[in-house]
View 1 (tube, one colour):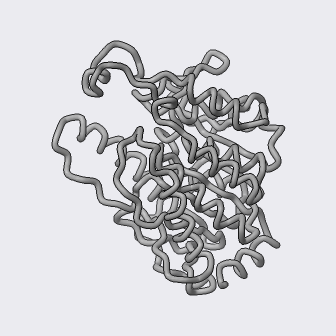
View 2 (cartoon, rainbow, N blue to C red):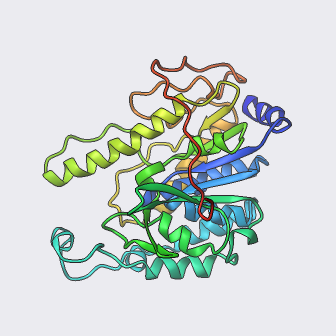
Length: 325
């Protein structure tokens, strides 16, 4: 179990971070990954979440044990897309064209959060947790780490056009994935020495050719998110271990289909379990990216999997935290 031995050695020298990406209903994959990690005794010192990763990350930070993951599993098995994303009588194309900022309201999501989380502030959580959202007018990423918990999670998960912006202290926020979908750089900035990346945003799969103008718009949004993830992976210092947990072969699904959550959790649990046990498993590397020099492979006890790609981006500058000046 090369990876586990590596984790134990690294744990003695610095913090361990879990980074949970956005990904909508594919967030169920993260629960399988968390099951694989917690069953092997891997516990984070810091949890960073974006969008659906903020939802799952807060749940884990409240109870970072297999029991806590079991609660998240039950939540995902019970989720109803019609409750989280209540539709109307209009076809989706018409709904997108109507007046208003979003297709769905967020009352159902707020209700689920309030029912499933006993914590009401960041300070109530067992493990330090931060989530990112996009300041719409300020055009910047904002990290929430203190104070009330529910509204920042809703802001981080406010998928553009799907959910409305969330107002906090007079500032309107949208989905954190707009600015930092997989916040690996944030983990480095906060001093993590080992980073487990629970990335479920389908970056590892090629995008289909666009057939409609809307497809081009969606593709452009995907490219922007994909680019930052690639850049931050390539900028990770060589003395930091990065584990890109595999998801398994995930199916294509509509954004509001929550009927296959159990299947997704099982796929990711098996794939991530193989990776952590040192069995062959394909890490979730973005399309067109070599595994970063600091990334650890399942079979090599810490040896480099590939050399870092050329053109390393500069390390990210410290970002603004909510409440900080």
